[in-house]
Image (cartoon, rainbow, N blue to C red):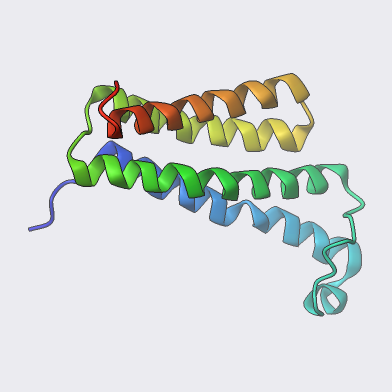
Length: 136
């Protein structure tokens, strides 16, 4: 029998899934802007999309990758060590929602809110780290 999924693992999976699908609108825009054949050739990373939103979403995607690489191991370690509780569950949930907000806010170009969303997610990562180190 499979044990129930903890909130930390659940939100780590959702954060990874979100990160995995953020590229889809970028690719659709690329297909629209340069055509299927050009888009299927080897990528040219220095070619900036014409649509500002696509450029910002590409940056949000890179940022999401950088953050899920930190968050997911922390969530897994909390789970493996059995240090999960209501605080770590809340931190995991808030982290995920802050990443959704960050991607949307970044895509729509709202600078101050983007930084706030990022800082909230970072704080959630620190909650998990402090719990792992038994400091919180």
